[in-house]
Amino acid sequence: MNYLSSFFCLILFLLYLNFCACMWPWTKKWKAENQMAIIKDMSKEIRHKAETLPTPRDIDIIDQLNKDIIDEENLSKHKAHICLEPNYERDYKYLCPEGWIKNKNGQCWGLHYDGHCESLKYFQEYNDNEKKEFVIKKKKKEK
Image (cartoon, rainbow, N blue to C red; front, top):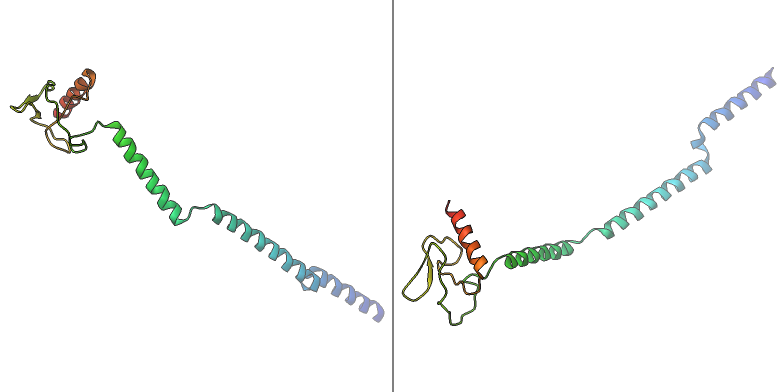
């Protein structure tokens, strides 16, 4: 009987150790190696993601390019205004659009013009349709 109880205790002890597999030295090493592999994989992934993100300098360059594109689009949409035109001798023989008057110098003067330059406008670069469009836009603004 003593023999059986010792054997039974040994079996119980081995079963206990089996349930507590974390107590085995090779199990601890195996878990540590797995954790290190996971950490290495995570660090590689983080490094890869960080390399694909733009730097602050890249962001500044992109912002400047976007601003330049918007400025270029805005300039291409609008005709040159008096403040953007170069200095040269003007030709004032063209008729003024409706709502504008021709002064004694032959200049077209917008009485109620509220543009960003001055009330003086030159229309020699405009064709007939552009002149009509200008008048229509001006009338819509006044309403």
